[in-house]
Image (cartoon, rainbow, N blue to C red):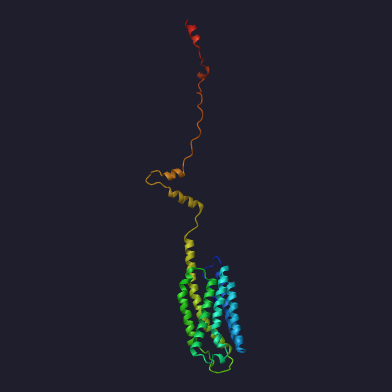
Amino acid sequence: MYGAPVGPGGSRLPGNRGPWWVQVVVSSLILLAYLVAQVAAYAVGDTTERWTQYGLSGAVLVVFVVITAAWARSGWRVIVAVLLGLLFVGLERLALLPFYLDLSVTQEWSADVFRLASMAATAMLLTGLVVVWSVARRRTAMTWVGLLPAAGLIALGTWATYYHQPDFGVDLTATEVTLPLHYWIGVVAFESVFGVAAVLVLWACDAIGLATRRSVTTSTPATTPNVESFRTTQLYRTQAGHPDLRETERYRPPPPPLAQPPRRPDDPSFRTTQIRRPHDSGTRDA
C-alpha cells in the first residue's frame, strides 16, 4: 500500500492512470503524505490525552486506505482494497489497546502480553500496507512470486521494531516527558522502511511480468484476414502432386455455360436447293 513505483514502460495498459513517471510521482506523494500525517498524529497525540493519539493515528490509517483505494486500477480493486484495509486497521488497533488502557487494568499483566501485542500490531500494520497497496496497484500474476521475500521482510521488520528500534537520542526511561518530534519521525520511518522494501520486491516481480507480457505481444503480430485466408489455403495443399478432394470441394471450378441450340449451317446451297416431289421426277423421265 506504500507508494511504490509502477512497472517500467510508457505505454498505456488497461488500468493505467498515465505514463509510468506520473504514477511514480503520485505514489511517492501518497507515501510522503502518509508519513507526515502519521508523525503529526503521534506528536500531537503525545501532548494530549493518550486516547487522542490512538484515535488520530487510526484515522490516518483509514484515510490512507481510502486514498489508496481511489488510486486503484479498476473498480473491483477499490472494493477489495477498502475491505482489506479496514480489516488490517481494525486488527492493528485491537493489538495496540493494551498500551492505551488504564494502568489499573494492565498492571497485573505479564511482559509477554505486551511483547506479543506490540509485535502483532507491527505485523498487522506492515502486512496491511503491503497487501492493500499490492491489490490496488499490481497487474500481473508474477507478483505472487515476490510474496515469500515480502513476508520475510515483514517478519524482519516486526522483530527489528520490537528488539532493535533505536531510541533516536531520547531517554525512554524518563516518565511524564513529552517526546520530541524527531523521535516520532525516526519511529515512523524505521517501521515504514520494511513495508516499503516489501512493496518494492513485489513491484520488481510485477515489472518482470509486464516486460514478459509486452515481449510476447511484440513477437506475435496480429493476424489479418488475408494472412488467415492464406493459412487456410495452405491446409488444403496437395502432397506429391495428387489432388485433394477437400481442395476440390473448396475451390470447385465454375459450371460450364448453358448449351446453345445448334445453328443451321451457313451454306448458300442449303437455301437455294429445291426439293423435288416424286411425281415431278417421274414425269421428266417419261
